[in-house]
Image 1 (spheres, helix red, strand yellow):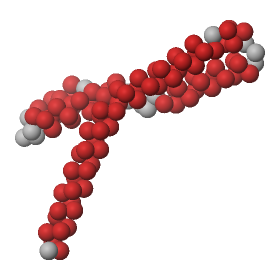
Image 2 (image 1 turned 135 degrees about the horizontal axis):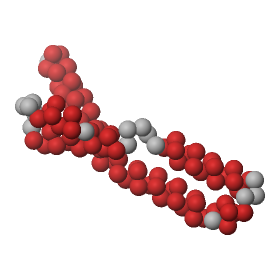
Image 3 (image 1 turned 180 degrees about the horizontal axis):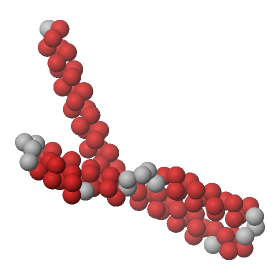
Length: 106
């Protein structure tokens, strides 16, 4: 995370862009690998325990399911802002390319 800050600190990037880049880097640092597979595996384990008539799983079924879905929901919320920033950047780049094309043709 610090490496990205140091890398960008000496650029002529605007303060807002600098903040967004460091923020995105931070989110990627926290969630390097998409952990969505972990949630699928966790829910799969609960399903397996349920189908194998595991008493502990059956007794705590609601709590186990809610815990997995709650963690997944939190991950989605925490990464949504970074996703929005990245999409905004992509849109800006596409608009710039479109303006360049219009200028060339016009």
